[in-house]
Length: 207
Image (cartoon, rainbow, N blue to C red; front, side, top):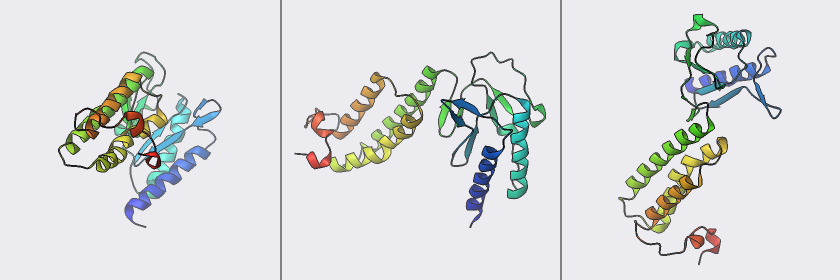
């Protein structure tokens, strides 16, 4: 097992230890507990705002540091309250120098903030801009119709699948805009040569 595999294996063990520690309480939504989520080397922990709980997590981090030989940089770790409150709450465990913030933070590949409307706007508009750039780059190449479909499935749809799995659906206007971008890419910004209803059919039902 190489160094990177060892790191992720140790990190996974640390997260399992956090989940099993009785004194660490996460938030409960519809009888489901959300304590630890991981994406690559990003980790997000959701807990109830109590000092003893945060200190319990820090103890787990110390164990992780001893086992892995890695040091946790608390000054690079951000803490954000999920409640819509003013930025006047007490900073518990001040000796660790966590970054306490009320502004949106980037984690697990998405932007997290307090308000649902801002959450959708910040993430979907970011994805839309990325999709526009991808289609612009590939639109300069001489691709077949089938080649363009592969580009859409591989590089474009993948930008949306993850967000649609964790966020509410975007507005109809946003979805229509994405739809227009895709068909403009397929037909080189020219009128459609095939009905869109037919284009959306499974390949086996193609004419």
